Length: 143
Ligand SMILES: *[C@@H]1O[C@H](CO)[C@@H](O)[C@H](O)[C@H]1NC(C)=O
Image (cartoon, rainbow, N blue to C red; front, top):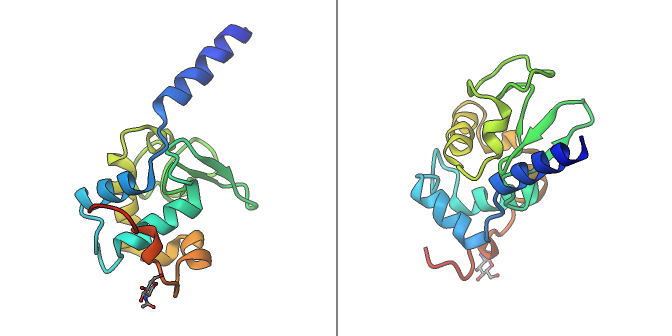
């Protein structure tokens, strides 16, 4: 029993990835997140740093019992389904798809959130990025 549990944990860890800041900025840029609907690359780096510390495996429970998944900390109440409190599955995905080292799905879902609600959908953005000088988030990155 313990052995199986340990194996599951190892698999979960192996599939997640923690990005280095500039590597993540480059990935976002390559996926057209530089100026997507007016959201700057620095906004994207800032909100993900404060949301997940660039960890694709990040999971956090909110006070309303909803859960945020992955590098963008996307919420299961409205955007993905984990069989829990989901009411809408706006991105049409399983929440676990947001936690892998393949960030395609997470980025596509983040764009959909921006399409519908803008960058202010992210509490971390409002708390740490809005009306701030974000130049440090891209500093030293060879973009
Ligand atoms: C932001 O900060 C950088 C250095 O920290 C500075 O060079 C730049 O002028 C600032 N930008 C604004 C708009 O204040």
